[in-house]
Length: 293
Image 1 (tube, helix red, strand yellow):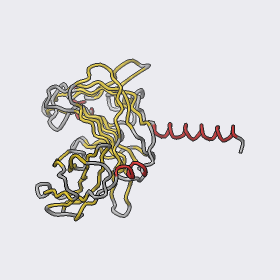
Image 2: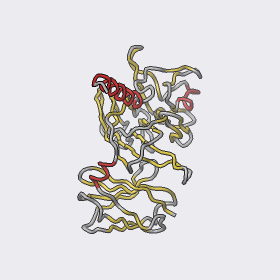
Image 3: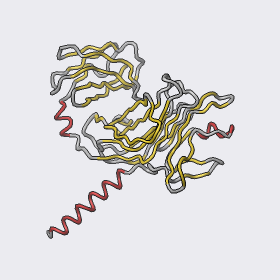
Image 4: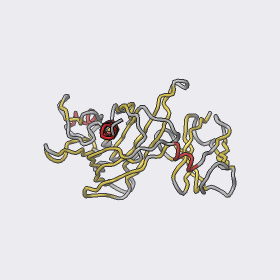
């Protein structure tokens, strides 16, 4: 084949990947006023809860040539403090959890963008979360292929760029992505804010080399009732600690790793459900799902 033609095909392939990775309305340039208030296209917010008081948790910042999103937790009479949340898809405003995302079939290495943020106090910690999932037809549920959980401690009071690495649980290719921007934590305080703009993904990883580099773990038994054993004999790097996280990324248990190939964790204190075990190593995290009966 002609070299120029090959080069042209390569450029088309790179352009296709770049376009497919773009976060829908990740620049927050497009907004729609359909219920008496503005909402960023392709994003769900908590404005529907606060609009009756003519107060909004998500508003446009910037100018018409360069908008961004301003998320601010607001105190609403008769309701209490409503967190400033934006989710790329649908949002359950009762549970404050995202219920769906957008189609996505790549394995990016990093989530990038610009931000400003500050909690009203050190007790209110906002977050950025990304979940790359794949439908498991055999189990009738979604598997988390990769994820990112960044707690916003301290403050960034002027625009700064960020690039946050994504941790992968396996070598699968996801089919969906959910992004959640939250100005507050579990106990929101009025005045906490998160501004964001130019959200995107960068890089592509196949996943195979990453898993080969880190090694693997085994969880026995799985499902488990009161305790689990984590076998680390297949790890290729020294590990620091073990954490148990729920499906929202909240750390429930953390334990330092003893100098043994098998680690035992007491899980009797957590309710039945699906959880993740994360092993922190020198060169990244290894995460595996388990079920508590």
